[in-house]
Picture 1 (tube, rainbow, N blue to C red):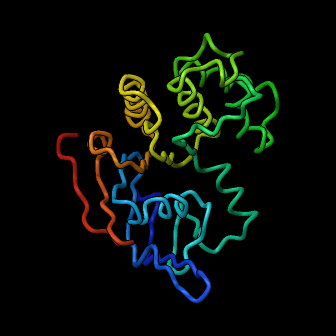
Picture 2 (cartoon, one colour):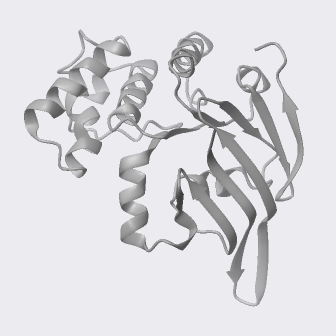
Picture 3 (cartoon, rainbow, N blue to C red):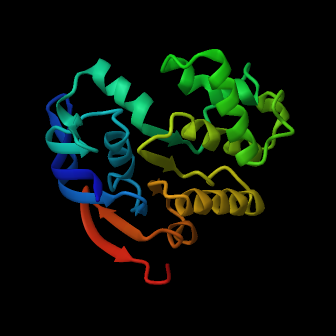
Length: 229
């Protein structure tokens, strides 16, 4: 079942008298439970694609269906609601709130969705334990390693049980050992049925996915199927 469909998606930025065409005629679908990697050189449109998928930006033309909704026609408030309810984000730089501890950082998405204190805390604690941080609940980000901070970010992405999880270079700031541990954790989420879309420049990271979508100059150059999975 396709839970993400992009139909003739184009994105153009108007810079004074110059039109910068970043994405052109993108047709893609992502199935429920699929693990997809998006690759391409700098300027290929990877970041713009991620922003569109994450409802952080709108296409200039074309349609984007997330689940059963055409989110390409929603206003800012509706897009914000969709982001909070249906999309989990994992960033290269973690994007944790420095003053909040592990539990509180994981609770942030639930707070914005109006989840009350007791179930929010219970859910956050369960997620912290799931990512191996059950003994770090009261630690703030500066007291955690990079790998541990990314584990908090993954738990936070799962807080509202999103329809899709978007990861932007999730191991980019980590050493090889910590990065490997994060990839194993992402593999585990996929095995649990989560839908993962990851942007990466690292071939070794991409090889863990079902499909690798290669972008070039704003277009889908080719799609590679990982037959080893």
